[in-house]
Image 1 (cartoon, rainbow, N blue to C red):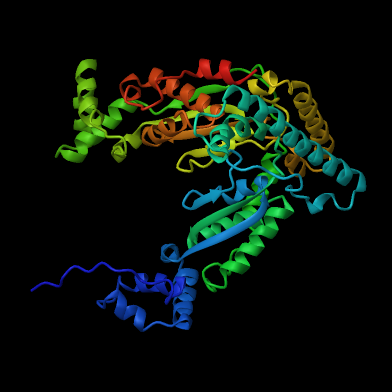
Image 2 (image 1 turned 90 degrees about the vertical axis):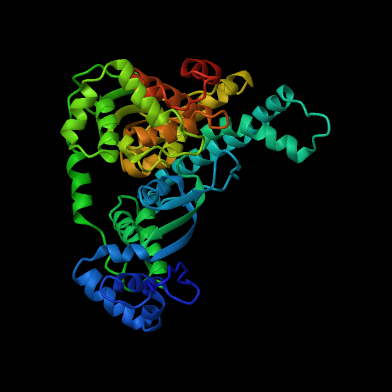
Length: 471
């Protein structure tokens, strides 16, 4: 009689992360059960195994079985960008949409400590931005309350919850990148080592010391797997080399804020051929030739069979990943901070500056707070330019969420399907709703068959969102 199927947990309360990783690693050469393997291991034996096989021989996949949950508190949103730049990890952070910041919740970089004038400028600018934020909360919330009166039987808490997104979403444009936040992080040891390496190679002292702190904390549970994480000269050299190359401006500055730069060749044919290949017996060239021989109507019918029956929470087949799209976007920093959470995309942002100007929410204008808003943005820009002469990376701390940022994004259709559905929904922030609707429009133009199956909010268009929410 064959052995019976077993499914069970290796309890992290009784086994260290490194021991769990070694237990799984040993199954490739041991006939024993996981329980038997784990019973024979100690923390010392696990460390020896990892030292030899993971560190010595480079079998890094073993480290993926060692998982840590890290609580990171009171770091700047600028530092969060580096921390959250790792694709295979999970993050949950303090939200600018659902929480409010108090006036003292901003980071003070050590790089300006030795220059009293720069320090004074930095502190004064942050205080002015946070003061504008607090005033805006009062003014804009009053207008929101007037436009959205309390409903019968609605208590204070329910009314505030309903109003909050209508004014906090707007007031967050004041908040600079120095704003402090908490982040819950779940990473395996392999990703964590790479994350620490990137942080230790970062130009900001805050991020480097964060990397040191995370390494120290992680080593209490992973004494072997992250102990060799260190700064990477390759990362530092790449940054220093390419940031100094001056590129002449050939094309006219400005242009469209959303451009579809590239679509993979024969994107729709490739997807349909890949599905036929998966479920058929012919080689790929025959499948592709068959698809290319079909009429547009016949291809649409194939696509209907592939995507027409998708339920709300169904995930499309992986073959949809053969269609890829590359966009260049210009969006405000607040919207970018939400975009970056979609880590299955390839995202290349430029450094955060004030050079591209800023967005102005229409509600700021209609509430009568336009002049203080523009004053605050100009103050931030002047301070950024002054500080950037000394250290452009530190100057980024002063850039508010309102300022625009350029980013190149590459994503496959399967990833876009999820992103565009989620971020075009009526409860998404209006800045990213506009981006999602515009991206969907470009996908539909480039690949009309696949684009017809995108689940975007049909009640809005990006032109409408731009007119309704931005001055």
